[in-house]
Length: 244
Picture 1 (cartoon, rainbow, N blue to C red):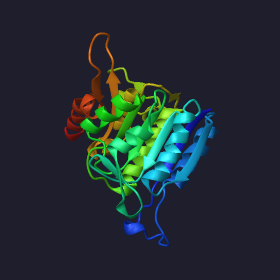
Picture 2 (picture 1 turned 180 degrees about the vertical axis):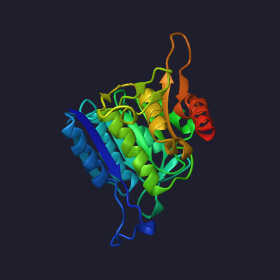
Picture 3 (picture 1 turned 30 degrees about the vertical axis):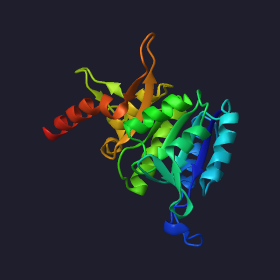
Picture 4 (picture 1 turned 90 degrees about the vertical axis):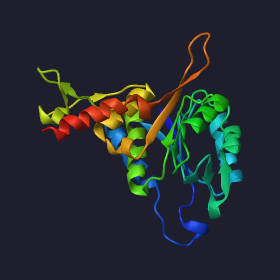
């Protein structure tokens, strides 16, 4: 059973604790249930954090139980090289990387504005040894980014619809040509984010990016950035749509 740990900060500015606010939890519970219908059982654990200290305690448990949790989703406000806790308290990249190592088998997803630039991703991957890290390079809208995060996690945990190839070599969503569909699943996170860009191009528009390290023998680790990897393919698909 795949394990997903979800860590979410307060969203209200200046820590207005009694005001109503959104949460990613209901959406992830719905995804867990839908995947269960398809035979993919998910162990979902959800916790709130307010400060760097809280987050450190939680991530320490994640690292200790890294054989149980394959994915860690951290949702909070963010700025360049830092997350923001209760009352906009900064949780800096250097502190975060200390909390997350070693993480060889874990993939991290950050639902936070501005946080995950290529430099930040390279620093995080080198110091933690994480399987991958994903997030956003710029400011993002809450609802759209939450949907992107949930869709990516759903694809990673349970798969997505398998597209069909026409006699002319085009790939189309299966329901456009048939009345049934098949689920395809891959463990390769770069392939999964390519499927996400294909199905939901807005994810690329709001700079959702996934980073891995390519470790060739005798070479320095090279950063692989999905945002650049699939950019030409997305632009080509949009040109075809404009020409219809």
